[in-house]
Length: 127
Image (cartoon, rainbow, N blue to C red; front, side):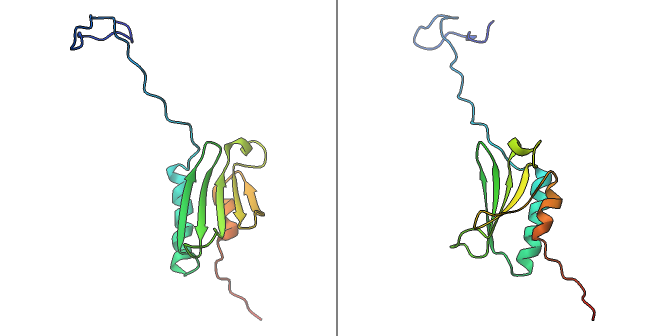
């Protein structure tokens, strides 16, 4: 039996083999973060929420890139965007951190090293 054949005749008198299966349209290809990448991003996000710096986030998956947007308040523009663009993977690196004005703070091949620019850990300063 071929892919287009139906095993049993359909109701209404269609003979075996005369009907064709119409394939379901495939979902459009989208770039997304995998589980490990999301874990790294959400660990940083959780720390910053606990410190009261960030309050909301949004995730967008487009055919070209995946974007994790970070907000101080829900009604504002995002403070930072963590972007994954596979087209740049062999050149400057697939990951980048972009501020609200569009300036790229850091770009690279490893996500944890790129988002380190956002992690403001307290440092001991002695005089």
